[in-house]
Amino acid sequence: MARARAALRSPDFARLLRARLLSQFADGVFQAFLIDRLVFLSPDQQSTAAGVAKALAILVIPFSVIGPFAGVLIDRWSRRRILLLTPLVRAGCALALIPLHGDGWPLYALTLVVVSLNRFYLSTAGAVMPRVVPQEDLLVANSLASAAGTVFTFAGLVGASQVASGVGLGALLAAAAIMWPLASALAARISAELRSTPHPGGAAARLSEVPRDLWRGARRLMATPPALGGIVSASFDQLLFGIVSVLSVVVFKQRFQEGVASYGRIIAAGGAGVIAGMFTVGWFEGRLVKSRIVALAFAVGGIACLAVAPVVHPLTILALSFALGLSYPWRKIPIDTIVQETTPDRFRGRVFSLYDLAFSGARVIAAAIAVPLVPRLTTGQMVALLGLAYLLWTPVLPLWAGRPRRVTLRFQAGGRADETPREIVIGGEAEPVEVLRRRLEDRGAGPEHRFRLRTPDEVIDVAPDPASGRWTVEREYAPRERDPDGVTT
Image (cartoon, rainbow, N blue to C red):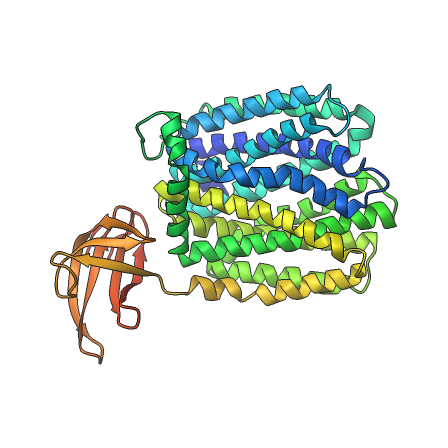
């Protein structure tokens, strides 16, 4: 709590947090509308699992096509305007949904806009986080923003799902349409400079560069093992969690003959777990490196699944939801922080867009996997398989994050190690470097040059790697860290 209070002393972070929480509460209300309309009111001849898969495919696959453009625009458009305008557009779409009936294309088109802009909004909020809090408060700020945001989404979904049958779906949409503009007004009070790299030219010119810029972001991500491993781990977690979610809906609707309110109770149990996880994730920070916190979370998820598999009952499903909710902040928050810390600001929007794309796409894949498995395996067998998958992934991120990061150096006269580096190539992109220090060391294989370099984004120590012919990054200095030579990075 002391760390949280320290982070909240930043007025801009407090404003961003309030805007994000109100927006995500409205997201939960909107999700209750979607669940009631698209899943629990699906035709009787269609299985529940197939209904969930259809809904996710319609909502997420089209976003997967346009989603990559979002990250480039986050890096090139005014991030402040994104935070202000996207809630207003979403509110307009929610109001337009009120008079619609059935599940025709207008419903899916408007819903796609609302869901896609939510990803756009949250990606932008994640990209600007390092600009509104000090570096030392970044993890706890992510804890408050990510986990508390999830809790508020759960709260909106649970509350709306419990009253949906009484107040009607139109009232849910109206409530969301009121809250999103209020979130926009809160974000308008942020005073920090949120812009990224300025870019000349009109919108058409910017959009024409999207494929190239997105490819540059992907190459930078591929050259950053901790960030890549974190994103893959988060996506795998969503794949498993998505299968659990589909399975839970099937069990409660078809086996226990319960409606949307039962799904609300599952979310409530998960939300209670997320609250507990949010308050405990900071305790691990001084005791475990971030990748090992994620490993612990996967282990907890696996043990919980294996414990529930022999006895599938409404209470055990709620207990599993609580356990997965508890471990969710232990996975998501350290991964978000790893990606933020290891990705330069000018690439961060594109990387978070790729992150969000993988995160969301995993849910569609989960539903597609669940459709053929539900009629072929018992619920206990499926939960046991999920538990094994969680446990098998436990050591992956620590091993992945520990992989060496390698770069290419270009020298003044063209290649010898005794010359002065002039450029560094990271992810296929050449950048100028400043040599802060050079030293000659002999570690048994002959004398080798080592350099301390300042790049446009960071200060690093590099050493030659004879096996690959490239250079290994031995140390990366955090922003504002003072290196042994007294150089502030």
